[in-house]
Length: 238
Image 1: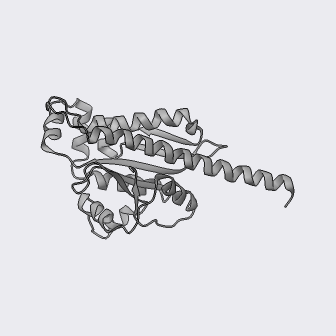
Image 2: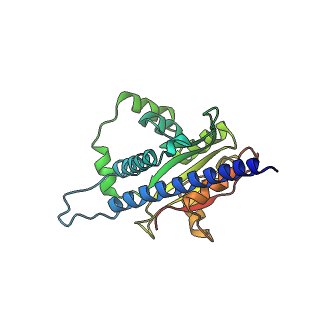
Image 3: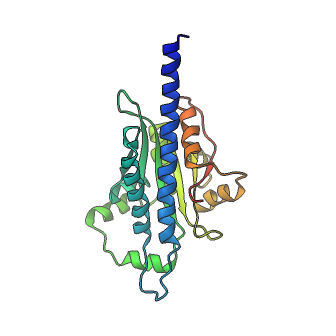
C-alpha cells in the first residue's frame, strides 16, 4: 500500500470516528437537557411540563447541537408529523447518509416512551385532536405503538433499527435509556408481545449498557450484513 493510500485510509477512519463521537456528544447533551425538565418540580405546583414538550426539548436540543457540529452532513434527523407518529409509531428517524448519493445507509426509527402519570394524561387530554389525527387513530386502532414501529422497521429492511427511548422509569424516574434492535418484528411473528413490559424486561436483565456512540458504531459494523441485532440497551444520561 502506497503512502498516499495509507493517508486516505487514515482520513476515512478519522472522519468515521469523528462523526460517531459528535453524534454521541449531541445525543448525551440533548438527554441531559431533557433530564432537567423530567426532574423539575415546582415548589408551588403551578408549573407542569407535559410529555410532548419534554420530547420536543430533547429533539430541538439535539438538532441545534448537531447543526453547530455540522453533523447534518453525515446524519439527518427527520421529525414525524403527529399523524405519522400515530400511524407508524415513530417520533423521528435518524439516517446515516451515503456521502456520494445522500441516500440513507442505515436508519434508526425512534419511539419515545414516557412512564406517564395521571397529571400528564389529564393535561394532554385538554387538547382537542384535529380531524386528520382522529382519522390516523382510527386507522391504527388495532396496533400498539411498539407494534407499529416494529412493522415500520421490518418494511424497510435489516438496515432500519427500532429504538425505544424511555424517558424515566419507575425505579429510576430521572434516567433516559433505550432498547435498540432490527429484530423486534420476529417476536411478533412468534406471537410474542412487543410492549412496555417486554422492553423494560430487556433493560432490567441487561448486563451492560452502551453509549449512543457505541450504539451507532454497532449499527454501522452491520451495515449491509443481513443479520439480526439482538436487543441492545443504551444509556443516554450520565
